[in-house]
Image (cartoon, rainbow, N blue to C red):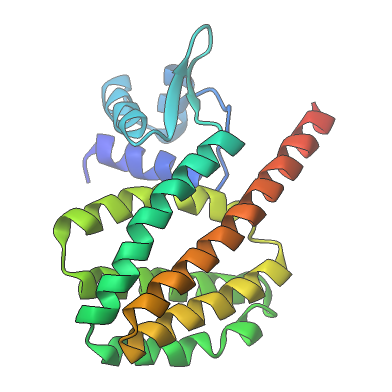
Length: 221
């Protein structure tokens, strides 16, 4: 793997996992030394992260990890409603129901997984990721899939905010199950509506979580 690619993958993973928190300054010399690369591949990695909008330039501070503001969250969910609602509708119309039947069986285990700590939580999110992949395959539209993948990149940062709210995770699992069941049944209208409901509840929770985190960070500062 090229040095620039390695630096990009590492920094991207740390941003998405919350290791590098919003507002963290990404100084070239410090990050190059930490990652064991020269400044040229690091700049390449930072340029890609800037294009992904995971990193932004702030006057007087240089490059920093992008903030997760309430305004950003609302904007992202407006796009998710348009893209994911359409994707669920198309998936219900075009699907091979076998993979979705398997996902339905896996989702039935979600309540138990969510009681198993970090290991169970990772498995649950793996199921959610596999639902996204199954919908991508069923949609069979490369333009829509590319747009969805970009949106999910930022959604994963927001998802982390709610990862310790077990009641919301249980609700989300039930919402995902309804979406999958609608796709299995070939009910495009229900699949779209279930996605709309899920995203509405997720948005409400994400805004509340972001506000709590901002209050907590201000208290620490």
